Each structure stands twice: as structure tokens, then as C-alpha cells.
Image 1 (cartoon, one colour):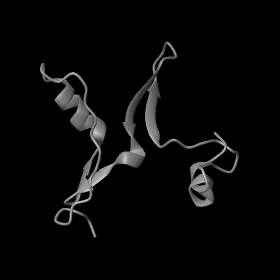
Image 2: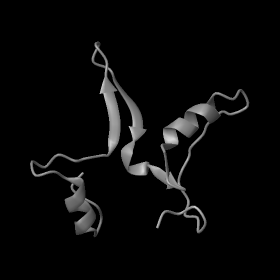
Image 3: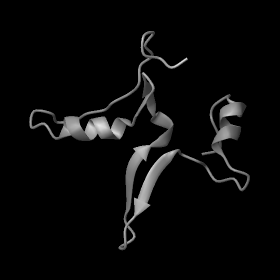
Image 4: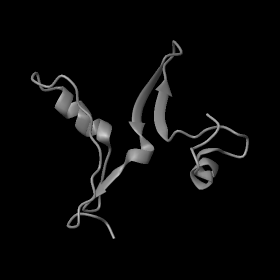
Length: 83
């Protein structure tokens, strides 16, 4: 990736001083060298002062036998938005 389309500010924020792209993903590597993504730091949802990671909610919903696929995203709310 060279950058965000017509968004120099977002491009500058996404790359470090050595040119590495910072995804905001949180991952771990096991002893065998396999990488497992745990969370998306940049998708943190703050609701009523609580930090909610989408992957935590997705994990619970996906455990239900009637759920095949799941994706959780934040949505602005006038009542619960942190100001």
C-alpha cells in the first residue's frame, strides 16, 4: 500500500518514520511462528465510558449455535457517546 486515496493526512498517520504501515491490529505469534490476530485496536468502541473491543462481542455471539457469521461495528449514539 502506498497510501490512502486522496488523503495525505490519513496516510501520514498510518506510516511510521521508517515507512512501516501501522494497521492498529493486535496480534501474537506462537512458538511455531503462527500469527493470530486478537483485536483491532483502532476499532475500539467507547460507550458510556466503557471500552468495548468488537472481537470480544463477536466471540460471544459466534459461540451461539444459530450464528454462522458475525461482525460488530460501532455506531454513533447521542445518549452514550463520550463527549
